[in-house]
Image (cartoon, rainbow, N blue to C red):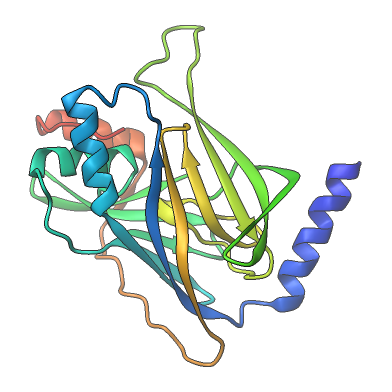
Length: 235
């Protein structure tokens, strides 16, 4: 009952402020789990992560999350780093349908892949301050099909810190659907996105580039098509 009241309170804050805001948020990958840093591969990927920055642009209807251009130290390690943190594509989010979408070319054909990363969150009452904003903690678990065997289920755990003070349901790498902007996102205690600069534009409208029109598929269908096309999967 207490959690229900808390949830209603957050959504009330979210709705009374409405979707009037537009803005831009700059993120960095702030940390990576410090295990095995003596391993050349882990060290190489970690070094690439430190070079990467990201921008989230949004309006009341949708958002786009993009990796900013940078010169990699090592292209192979840079690519592995992108897969690790889910930055292998531009991410589009739709506020009302709670969709997280990417364009993906498979076998010479373009698809729209729809991810469930804007649903399934468990809200908590834990708080902390990030960039001057009071943030609340939310957790989402995603089945890891690569490491799960039979009844032995393994999960990727996402921990988000979102602020109802910026009432938009977006965040890094397609994660969102919460009653506020995600200012910090941890993936499985391995790597963490953290907002470093927040620019709010209450009056200026921000135009979001459109996805290429294509057939919409699930991530599972994407994996099947990629395997048929003899490509490396990123699931």
